[in-house]
Amino acid sequence: MEVRVNLLPRLLNEETDVAVVIDVLRATSTMTAALHFGAKKIVPVLSVEEARKYREDNFEVLTVGERGSKKIDGFDLGNSPRELSEEMIEGKELVITTTNGTVAVSKSKRARKVILASFLNLGSVVRLLKRESGRIELQCA
Image (cartoon, rainbow, N blue to C red; front, side, top):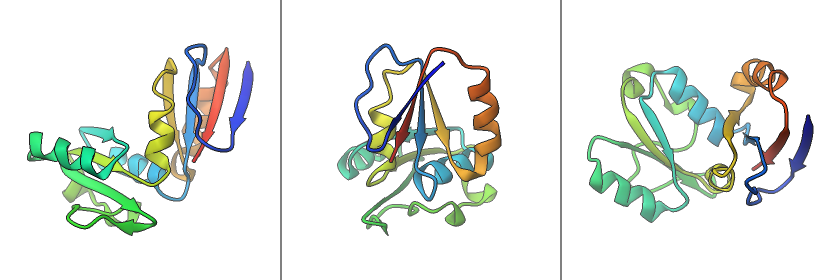
């Protein structure tokens, strides 16, 4: 197993087996919480405009995001797991854009597998990585 740490998100090449996206305070924690609360799907995008366009094409989607740690005007939710609840999230699709976390996810898409890591799911991530071989890139956001 080869592990590489990227202190800033970088575009991964096709040789990367596993990308572990780490944005422990917000983006990956929010996505982990949303999955815990039963989100049907989470779509990370790079821009506010892309999130709004996705919502226009999918009216029932919840918009989630921040810029500079502030909730984006007109979005349903900011980027804090504390804003989420099962009643709000269960069975829903979310489109999310953040200052750093969704950038790291986007730059990881060429990896064979992308894992979202946060303090909320650290044990599960460690167990998954112990079973992996090949090249693992830790994408810090």
